[in-house]
Image (cartoon, rainbow, N blue to C red; front, top):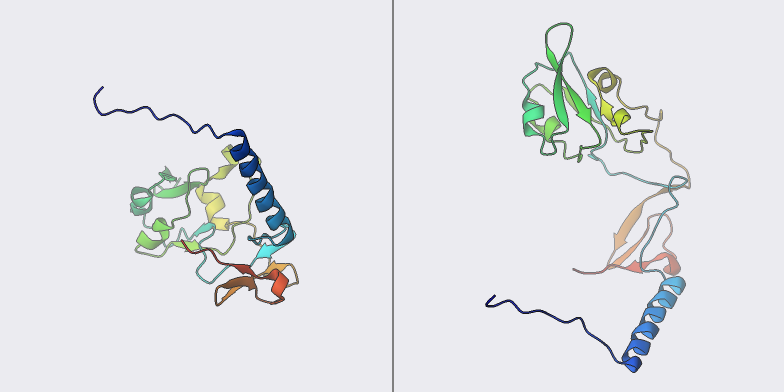
Length: 179
Protein backbone atom coordinates (compact mmCIF):
# COMPACT_ATOMS: atom_id res chain seq x y z
CA UNK A 1 0.00 0.00 0.00
CA UNK A 2 1.46 3.28 -1.09
CA UNK A 3 1.48 6.10 1.43
CA UNK A 4 0.82 3.98 4.52
CA UNK A 5 3.50 4.05 7.19
CA UNK A 6 3.60 1.90 10.28
CA UNK A 7 4.48 3.87 13.39
CA UNK A 8 6.44 2.19 16.14
CA UNK A 9 5.53 3.02 19.72
CA UNK A 10 8.29 4.86 21.57
CA UNK A 11 10.66 2.73 23.58
CA UNK A 12 12.20 5.00 26.23
CA UNK A 13 15.53 4.17 27.77
CA UNK A 14 15.78 3.09 31.42
CA UNK A 15 16.71 6.60 32.71
CA UNK A 16 13.88 8.10 30.64
CA UNK A 17 11.38 5.63 32.15
CA UNK A 18 12.57 6.58 35.66
CA UNK A 19 12.10 10.28 34.82
CA UNK A 20 8.57 9.63 33.47
CA UNK A 21 7.64 7.73 36.65
CA UNK A 22 9.01 10.53 38.85
CA UNK A 23 6.99 13.06 36.82
CA UNK A 24 3.84 11.00 37.43
CA UNK A 25 4.56 10.83 41.18
CA UNK A 26 5.13 14.59 41.18
CA UNK A 27 1.71 15.20 39.61
CA UNK A 28 0.07 12.88 42.15
CA UNK A 29 1.81 14.66 45.04
CA UNK A 30 0.80 18.13 43.75
CA UNK A 31 -2.82 16.98 43.39
CA UNK A 32 -2.79 15.56 46.93
CA UNK A 33 -1.46 18.83 48.38
CA UNK A 34 -3.31 21.38 46.20
CA UNK A 35 -6.02 19.81 44.02
CA UNK A 36 -6.65 21.43 40.65
CA UNK A 37 -10.26 20.23 40.51
CA UNK A 38 -13.15 20.88 42.88
CA UNK A 39 -15.48 17.99 43.58
CA UNK A 40 -18.58 17.69 45.67
CA UNK A 41 -19.61 14.87 47.97
CA UNK A 42 -22.74 13.80 46.05
CA UNK A 43 -25.47 13.00 47.21
CA UNK A 44 -24.76 14.66 50.57
CA UNK A 45 -23.79 17.88 48.78
CA UNK A 46 -25.77 19.19 45.83
CA UNK A 47 -24.65 21.61 43.16
CA UNK A 48 -26.96 24.62 42.84
CA UNK A 49 -28.53 24.59 39.40
CA UNK A 50 -28.79 27.76 37.32
CA UNK A 51 -32.08 29.29 36.17
CA UNK A 52 -33.22 27.66 32.95
CA UNK A 53 -31.64 24.31 33.84
CA UNK A 54 -33.16 21.57 31.70
CA UNK A 55 -34.10 18.60 33.85
CA UNK A 56 -36.90 16.04 33.77
CA UNK A 57 -39.97 16.73 31.63
CA UNK A 58 -43.64 17.13 32.57
CA UNK A 59 -46.45 16.86 30.02
CA UNK A 60 -49.70 18.84 30.08
CA UNK A 61 -52.09 16.60 28.13
CA UNK A 62 -54.74 19.32 28.01
CA UNK A 63 -52.41 21.37 25.78
CA UNK A 64 -51.12 18.43 23.68
CA UNK A 65 -52.68 18.38 20.20
CA UNK A 66 -51.01 15.11 19.07
CA UNK A 67 -49.03 16.83 16.32
CA UNK A 68 -46.05 14.41 16.66
CA UNK A 69 -43.56 17.32 16.39
CA UNK A 70 -41.80 16.35 19.61
CA UNK A 71 -41.27 12.80 18.34
CA UNK A 72 -40.08 14.03 14.93
CA UNK A 73 -37.56 16.52 16.33
CA UNK A 74 -36.00 14.25 19.01
CA UNK A 75 -32.39 13.58 17.86
CA UNK A 76 -32.03 10.56 20.17
CA UNK A 77 -35.36 9.03 19.12
CA UNK A 78 -36.34 8.96 22.80
CA UNK A 79 -39.96 10.03 22.24
CA UNK A 80 -42.60 7.79 20.71
CA UNK A 81 -46.33 8.33 20.52
CA UNK A 82 -48.84 6.00 22.17
CA UNK A 83 -52.54 5.83 21.38
CA UNK A 84 -54.81 6.68 24.30
CA UNK A 85 -58.36 5.40 24.88
CA UNK A 86 -59.74 8.73 23.63
CA UNK A 87 -58.19 8.11 20.20
CA UNK A 88 -55.47 10.76 20.50
CA UNK A 89 -51.78 10.00 20.51
CA UNK A 90 -49.63 11.16 23.42
CA UNK A 91 -45.84 11.07 23.85
CA UNK A 92 -43.83 8.66 26.00
CA UNK A 93 -40.19 9.42 26.88
CA UNK A 94 -37.45 6.81 27.12
CA UNK A 95 -34.89 8.32 29.51
CA UNK A 96 -32.43 5.57 28.58
CA UNK A 97 -32.11 7.40 25.25
CA UNK A 98 -32.94 11.00 26.21
CA UNK A 99 -30.02 13.45 26.00
CA UNK A 100 -31.94 16.32 27.69
CA UNK A 101 -31.65 18.62 24.69
CA UNK A 102 -35.30 19.66 25.22
CA UNK A 103 -35.94 20.15 21.52
CA UNK A 104 -39.33 18.60 22.30
CA UNK A 105 -40.14 21.48 24.62
CA UNK A 106 -38.78 24.07 22.18
CA UNK A 107 -40.73 22.72 19.19
CA UNK A 108 -44.08 22.30 20.96
CA UNK A 109 -46.36 25.01 19.53
CA UNK A 110 -48.90 24.73 22.36
CA UNK A 111 -46.45 24.56 25.29
CA UNK A 112 -47.49 21.09 26.44
CA UNK A 113 -43.95 20.22 27.58
CA UNK A 114 -42.52 21.84 30.69
CA UNK A 115 -39.03 21.34 31.99
CA UNK A 116 -38.30 20.92 35.68
CA UNK A 117 -35.16 21.81 37.61
CA UNK A 118 -35.00 18.21 38.82
CA UNK A 119 -32.36 15.80 37.57
CA UNK A 120 -31.49 13.53 40.51
CA UNK A 121 -33.38 10.38 39.66
CA UNK A 122 -32.43 6.72 39.77
CA UNK A 123 -34.18 3.84 38.06
CA UNK A 124 -33.99 0.24 39.25
CA UNK A 125 -34.09 -1.15 35.72
CA UNK A 126 -33.88 -0.01 32.11
CA UNK A 127 -37.57 -0.79 31.65
CA UNK A 128 -38.48 1.79 34.32
CA UNK A 129 -36.70 4.48 32.29
CA UNK A 130 -39.54 4.44 29.75
CA UNK A 131 -42.02 6.95 31.12
CA UNK A 132 -45.50 6.52 29.73
CA UNK A 133 -47.89 9.42 29.29
CA UNK A 134 -49.46 8.73 32.67
CA UNK A 135 -46.10 9.06 34.42
CA UNK A 136 -45.22 12.19 32.44
CA UNK A 137 -48.44 13.90 33.51
CA UNK A 138 -47.61 13.52 37.20
CA UNK A 139 -43.96 14.44 36.67
CA UNK A 140 -41.03 13.28 38.77
CA UNK A 141 -41.20 13.13 42.53
CA UNK A 142 -39.55 16.44 43.32
CA UNK A 143 -38.74 17.63 46.83
CA UNK A 144 -41.18 20.34 47.97
CA UNK A 145 -38.54 23.05 47.97
CA UNK A 146 -34.91 23.29 47.00
CA UNK A 147 -32.44 22.62 49.74
CA UNK A 148 -30.77 25.73 51.10
CA UNK A 149 -28.33 24.40 53.66
CA UNK A 150 -24.57 24.27 54.01
CA UNK A 151 -24.48 21.27 51.67
CA UNK A 152 -25.75 23.14 48.60
CA UNK A 153 -22.62 24.02 46.66
CA UNK A 154 -22.46 27.05 44.36
CA UNK A 155 -19.36 28.02 42.40
CA UNK A 156 -18.26 31.46 41.31
CA UNK A 157 -15.47 32.66 39.03
CA UNK A 158 -13.38 35.51 40.39
CA UNK A 159 -10.72 36.58 37.91
CA UNK A 160 -8.99 33.37 36.90
CA UNK A 161 -9.94 31.55 40.10
CA UNK A 162 -12.84 29.16 40.57
CA UNK A 163 -14.08 28.88 44.11
CA UNK A 164 -17.05 28.23 46.31
CA UNK A 165 -19.38 31.22 46.40
CA UNK A 166 -19.71 31.18 50.20
CA UNK A 167 -16.04 30.64 51.03
CA UNK A 168 -13.13 32.44 49.35
CA UNK A 169 -10.35 31.11 51.50
CA UNK A 170 -7.16 30.79 49.39
CA UNK A 171 -6.85 27.03 49.92
CA UNK A 172 -10.29 26.50 48.33
CA UNK A 173 -9.42 28.38 45.11
CA UNK A 174 -8.04 26.67 42.01
CA UNK A 175 -6.73 28.01 38.71
CA UNK A 176 -9.01 27.75 35.67
CA UNK A 177 -7.34 25.98 32.78
CA UNK A 178 -7.55 27.78 29.43
CA UNK A 179 -8.26 25.67 26.34
